[in-house]
Image 1 (cartoon, one colour):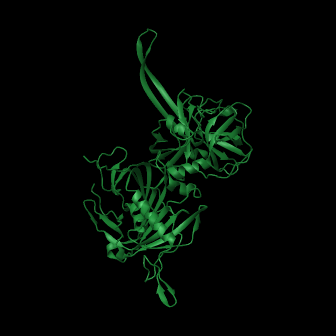
Image 2 (tube, rainbow, N blue to C red):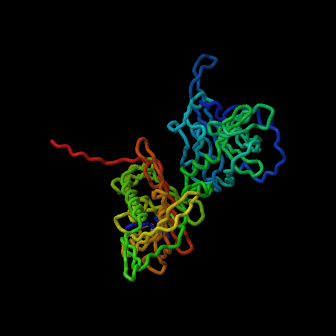
Image 3 (cartoon, rainbow, N blue to C red):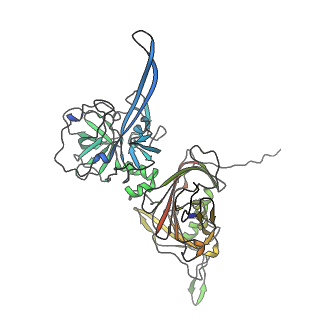
Length: 542
């Protein structure tokens, strides 16, 4: 039986590239002419942020007396980033900025996670020269990275993005934090420019609106903004004396959809194939009283005739069973975020999950030593925890339990055709349930409760499962539910390709949310860093 841990109230607590990366000297902001008169409604100092890292290394040098004396070498790296989301908890920048700057904090807030869109092993990676003479291999058309901060930056916010195609001559403004004349003093600077054309490498080229040469050191990772709409259209990644190149915002949208699908659903809602928090498409499915999971009832010539299930339902069952069986052995990193209502997450955790023969174990990531049977409870007044629904829900819909399943009309989701199926499991099926926990600090009270459940399965046109939902039938009138009125889960799946192995479906996200009175609690889970492994046994005769 699928059990979902759920806590209502905490009662008490116990105590080398032709265009170099934008890291070149420039003549200073005073040489840049003003743009045409446009009323700017945004304060870009609340959107664009400097990224700086300074490292002091003690060494020795020879003085005038030819005797060695102490010396302090300074290694400083500069870049620019910008708020990706409305709350400014995620900072976007370039990959080469993320790799060359060793920043541990941005404007005082600690960086807890780094997401990279490219790297030396990336398809299309080339050797790119850095200002210090080093070479950094990466794909220039995916020169992107994201920093996740522990807390949102106060008094900062994100900006709207435009996915529209740029027109030649379209006027833009480039915002970044270049080097000042006296390093490391820097200030936000605007560089007026116009769109020139896309490059053969997949970047966008912009001409400066200046008669004098311009080089922008430290502005990599800044934003290119349409002057009229003040929407972000690209991310600055490199410069020459007369031109800047930038990564298109469409590439950023693809990257965010893979690295942070819950975030992408908010800022790029039309780019995700399936939203990780999507709602069901149809009303609740409740089978007729004489429904048989193996045989569908119809009437013919006054006699009851029971043909076999439709071929599409049989195919769904076999694909669901195959998906469940294929996820019995793997290692991945699963990150969690807990929160309530429409607020930002109030707790985070990362675990390495090891699934061996369908049984999952956890270790705190990246340095955990102890193996755990379940993740630690977040110390909050109310929270919900995901279970192993990602493997048990496909198994429920599969061939083993013969649950009641029907196919409904296909639907288009983000311009992709989806087959939609509905299932229902009664209380007697004993397959669904949850575990309400009352935490008193020194001890907890919990009891597993069986429930009926229903949900939807979305597949592609080849009936490969991309999303499954589950809704528990709860009632605040039943004492065993301890005041919980509803509990739901949404799972998404996607294709994983590792080395020479054939592509396979794996869980991508899990989203659990439940309501207790007027309060809604949720947990978001994200799978990354997959390692697939198989157990093979050979019997060798003497």
